[in-house]
Length: 308
Length: 271
Image (cartoon, rainbow over all chains, first blue to last red; front, side, top):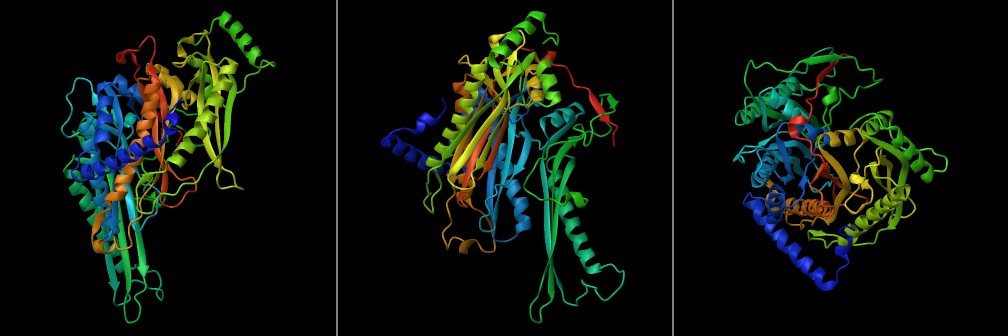
């Protein structure tokens, strides 16, 4: 049973496998540059779409149930990766990296003949290599019964249940928007640290934070505008560092802010048609009704400190 | 799927239980809710099934500057998991179970030897209350699934039944960059295409293998797929891509999409 038997092959077969691997890698590299899915992935997606190979869904059975009852069919799990080296900026690399991965995910979904990708999760592999990071997106490509394949499949970072909930409310989740900004501040007059004073705002640092956050959010708005008319579900990540300046050099401060959100296309003033029943959950401790799974593991966010 | 089980089914079940367990006691790792939902779905737990395998993993080093699958390690992970799973399944078959629900597959490193890994598969064997054999896997043995009791109920109500827990694995060595490779990229953010390509290939291999297993089990699709990465204490550039899910088939009497009940939205007023 299983593939293990395949491994027992004699040496000529292993040689063939090596040649095949080399060929596959060359194809992957070429395909990445041309922004199209690699040939082997393409074949698998098309087989799944045509019913020649089993479909693959990252959806839970409950999600499968809802997705089916709303006329959506899973095709295949799709994924995309972009591995960036930060020669220039860590912060801006994040906007770049997720942007690139998003484009690739869309290309894969398009090749699968999908209308949408649901349940898109952001992942990062824990291989700490030379000031670089991978930006990986994994989700499930679906098609809607009766609709033609989309030229521009939508990408929803929400789980399938929430996707359907949004669709029912006439809101279409469309993609991911990213805003990332950082700034260095050189503290020539030593105003950032006010250790000798009483209660007083550190204006310089406040100002630095304000600027960085505003710019990141402005960028988010600009990026979101190309995809929809609103964003939901912010993920905020921010850090501030102090660096000693050395002899005759001022202290420097780095502030960075990254914000990532799900973009939606919503019509204004459209009420939600479902009745909501009020229940008293007798569950002790945290109610399972209130929990939802995390959709990324790429940022150790300061969510608990209170995001914006 | 009626909640009431006929009396003769109960009698029959008693027989099944006592043939597997002299005490007539069933064992399971179900929570109360899981237990109730599995029974709501028309099944009865009969006993906990366990398969274990302690495996010595061979050594393989990838060449420094090459992206490649480490097939010795891939094979080891595959073989050991396969052994644990098939032992669990054999135990279930011996009990007369129609399937195993809530399979948990764990890997543990044994502390005194870095090459020894312990694989444990554990789940609850269940039988259909009416003695319906249509839920068995394609080979007539018990189905396996990593779905919880709740998910099992939901899957049947989505019009599908579990066939086999399928997985694909690929242990991969990501190439190192040469010492001078960094020079050209100072001051720019550039994509490390080699690394990206490595991720693509490793993931593709894992997913293909999982899909292959599903096709071999004659399944229509795979639900609850998790594609993740892990490292079991290998060198820094070695990573395992692992795809796992439950292969499913439509029920004998398919449920039309329109027949699936709409869920009710509730607002918990607890806090």
